[in-house]
Image (cartoon, rainbow, N blue to C red; front, side, top):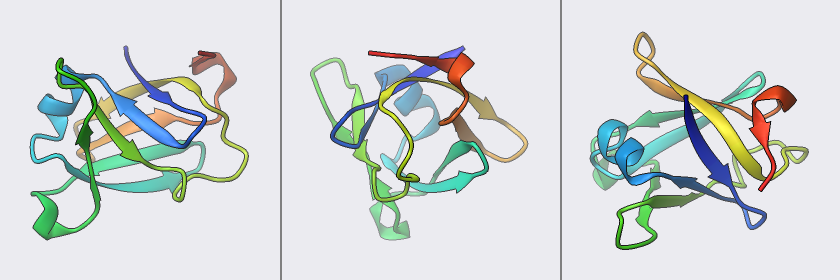
Length: 102
């Protein structure tokens, strides 16, 4: 299982390997669908969307995501998985069983 972290300041942190594998152009579109946040890769900044910023030397990435999220989503470590059929990273934002508090 994959995990990402939502910070109290509204940043979503992605591990380097996850970001490189699914978001090689460091750009994405974020959508909320029911109890999930969907991150769809784009083909770079010219395609629009949100930009992933490098957080550290290991290559972890971060994106400011709070404007997309519903007001009641709490920070913490969130379960995620890649949906091949839809080409999106799906992140559980309200499932308490999939959350691990930081």
